Length: 74
Image (cartoon, rainbow, N blue to C red):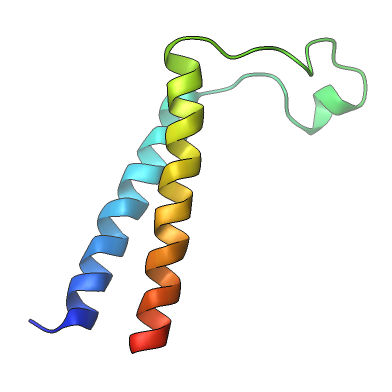
């Protein structure tokens, strides 16, 4: 198993985790419709919602880094 195969497997695992975290977050009502008249655009995240929000950014960063490294070495 070479490094490119390993990187592709890692990317798939991170992608599945990222999809799962985004689906778990669910609807918050702060979509595009909330920008044009919604009342709770700026609200604080607490507890598990804050953890999922931070985990989304971490997983996105890891996925982006894995993609860049895979392109560079491949």
